[in-house]
Length: 91
Image (cartoon, rainbow, N blue to C red; front, side):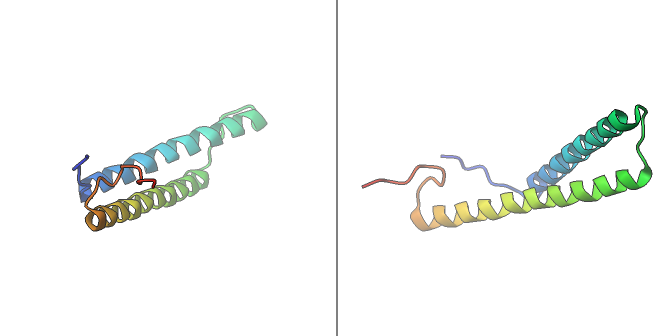
């Protein structure tokens, strides 16, 4: 049974981690596609800003999803007084 509680710090780190990962992945894809089409390094500033906005949205979505599922697990654990990750009993 895991008693690890998620705190604000862990959610902030999760947000920063996924936002950074998606930002770097998006930049790598944009650079690769630009290089394949133009045969030179091409990365305009508006493309970087657009990529940052999309990464922020993805990071927020993942963090919000993790928060909601964690709260659902806490509710079910309180209601059932069981391990929230244990498989359900099959009769």
